[in-house]
Figure 1 (cartoon, rainbow, N blue to C red):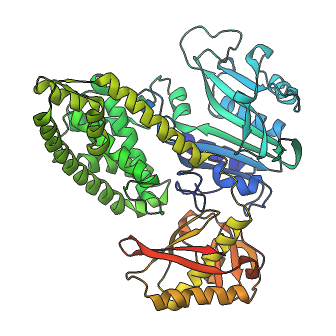
Figure 2 (cartoon, one colour; figure 1 turned 90 degrees about the vertical axis):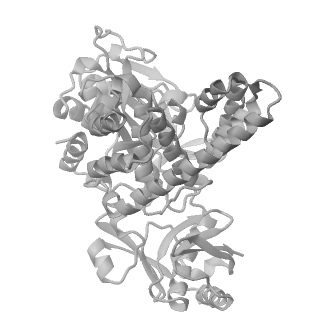
Figure 3 (cartoon, rainbow, N blue to C red; figure 1 turned 180 degrees about the vertical axis):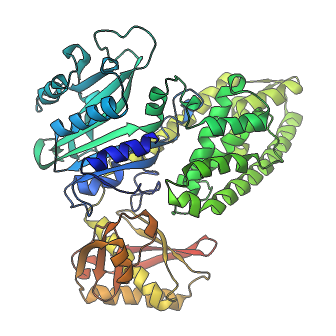
Length: 583
């Protein structure tokens, strides 16, 4: 039994319900590119909305984080990873949460007590030091010398600028063959964090004040890759059982050993795995120059560059061979991996072909550049253009320059590259800032409007129209739907008129909780039925619309205002896109 199964079995045995992993691409949350933690899809429930599966939940959640993209290639970082989590939504609190964690680690995983240490929240002027958690740990056998009190930066969690928040307790494992120190020093990097239990007992208000929450929640997260490395006693995550078959395939394709080419092999393994998961998501992400599509393109191209570095045959199906190993490994846990296998392979094949053409153009550009040079140096701007436009890593530019007896302003390039990174990071930070709980009044209205538009298109265009994705901001809604022709002006007008008529009718919006099977047999529609748990929320708008959905929605359609289509365009083959506003 692997760690995922051990974790789920333990928490189900202790009264939790396993919920499916949420999609990698968040629905109706433009503030983030990807789900970055197991708790992110659960924000509405952590804020008090009843969860259809009850108050005790557990899962393994697929996540992508890009903050460490430049660190990929070392022993411990990943862009895609799996997060194991258990939650209490207003049910148990610190004592049970800490006890469950302790029992799982020491009794199920058999981790020796002497290898464990913990941090707890040191408190602030407004929030007292967390002596409760410290005393629970001591009662379980953790020595006071192994408990460290840390401040807000380390042991306090909040989603965004305001909202549910609280101190946390983090569990550390001594990952070294050295003698285990008596006293725990959290700055000693031989101690690695393996689990984080967040206790949401406060709410941070817009004016900065902190108040107690009526519903106190527990949110935990354990990184699968890191814990497997701990259990298997290796210091390199890529030498665990998670990666062995993928690395073996790269060794076979490159005719090189992992020991001789570890950084490039790690980058290829990590980036191909992440690309498989992004392109398998039901959101239908394709490589592009914006948002998730840009990340997907960047990952695939970076993997290709490192494969060239390892002298893997570019004319072979090497990329698909690695992807197939990854698909086989995960298809039993994530149904979309199996269902969308052909799409994944097609995305990888097409992007590889495009990039190879881009590289050819880049080589021509390089030749042109060399023929016009008036000095013996390729300057920083020229080197950066080769990188940014044609995907040339600086190493390739240096290699080609050497063949022409030229030098490269590598230091200038690095400075320019760093400046570019800072801009990208700032842009990413804007995407992530405070958006986790962005379900305000206007977003709620737009969410309901997507249901009305879906219903209208089924009447105007045909019953085979189905939603294929949506994106909502406070300024507009975007709705993707299956349709193989450009909508005529008449079709757009009819759809708009229907939505506005239903708004004028002020139809009540109701919600029922039922089993997924009952929901489907009652005629409820769902965009991707596989992603929903066995118990679902079904929202009905009179006789107009009936959909399985996570919400939120208005109480009556009359709250929406006037609906107006501002644009209709192609999204991808067989998929059209409507952008609309509420006035």
